[in-house]
Image (cartoon, rainbow, N blue to C red; front, side, top):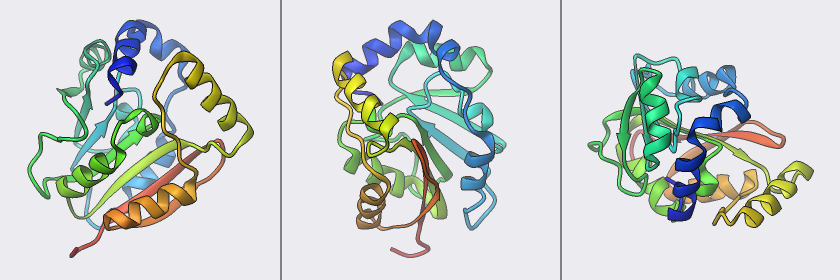
Length: 193
């Protein structure tokens, strides 16, 4: 899911990733999934890496999708279903997924427009796209933007209102679940587009 340079970085740090990253906020993620119109049976965590956020999701079928082989190896070791792939071309049928999540990774994804359009395509009507992302307008967010540039990432951050407008243009109904340094946006696929 990351740019090519970002993927290489995540392949290298995969063994240490879970030691330095906090666990995902299960309550917030599951509250986002609860916004779906129907029960969430199948969820895909794009840019899901080691599966740390996927493990927090309350759904019978949880799939981690990422481009980093090293990170997917960690997720497989946790017993999670894994798919190596690109979020710009999701390997799922139209209307076949109840929810898609992306936790702390959307800013790494090149061509976010294509990613959002693909998520919209694979989501069942009434399904949700839950995005946990960092707000570049907060003090910590400004620091993260600088740090990722120094590391050489091609990150593209958006403040909540920018991300909401972007997702609405794709066709989603958008609501902000929480705010702060890390915020969570829920984008629902309308019943008819």
